[in-house]
Structure formats: C-alpha cells, structure tokens
Amino acid sequence: KRMRNLKHFKSHEFKCCGQNCSVANAFEKMNGELLERLDNAREIAKIPFKVNSSYRCEAKNKEVGGAMSSAHLTGEAVDISCNGSINRAIILGALIKAGFTRIGIAKTFVHADVSETLPQNVVWLY
Image: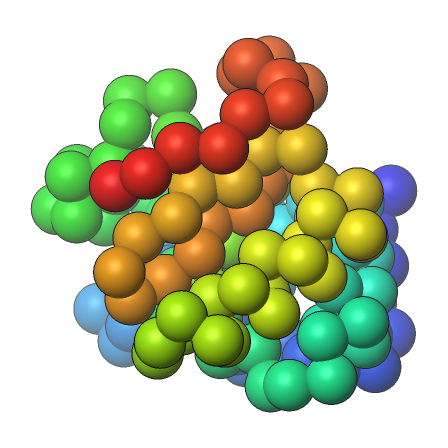
C-alpha cells in the first residue's frame, strides 16, 4: 500500500545518499503506511518535520553505521531532525499519537519506523 498524496511532504524530501547514489527516487521505496503515519504525525505536531534520513541503500546504511537489520533498508523508517527538548517532545508525542510503536531518540533526530519484523512497543536511545 503506497500513499502518494501527502499533505506535509514532497517526494524530494526522501533521499538515499544524494547525487551519486544508484537509487534515483527513494520516495518510491518508502512504505505507504509509514508515509501515512508520518503525514498524520506532522499534522498533529503543527511544526515542520525535516526528514534527514529515509530509505537507505546498503552502502549508505553501512557508511552511517546503521544496523544490518535497519528498517531504513526497506523504506520503513525515517529520522526526523530536531533541535532541542521542546521540539523533541512535540515530535515524540505526535509520533505516538499517530501510531508509531518503534521510536529511537537521539540528540539531533528522532527515528520512527513501522517494521513488523523488529521488536514492537519500544523506545531506544542513541
């Protein structure tokens, strides 16, 4: 199931690794359920979400130190940039309200994914 008409995001916001990547359109590899929940979370949060990581090819995933079983490899994950505890709390609350059950919290981003093969109902720190 893929959702293409997002209210708060454009397809170009979902990139793998820039110009030199063999993945021309990472948006096409994104999971529809993830996109739907992400758009909904953005609506709930009422603040911009900057996606700084979405689908990743294996080379990019290795380069950034991603887990071998990372949901980014299947287009089931995004990292949303955040600057400060207030925005982090707003993003976190919105992701939970939108139905995300796999969330990672880092100093500069919040990870959200919809993988069904990885542990559920978890929040972790980087």
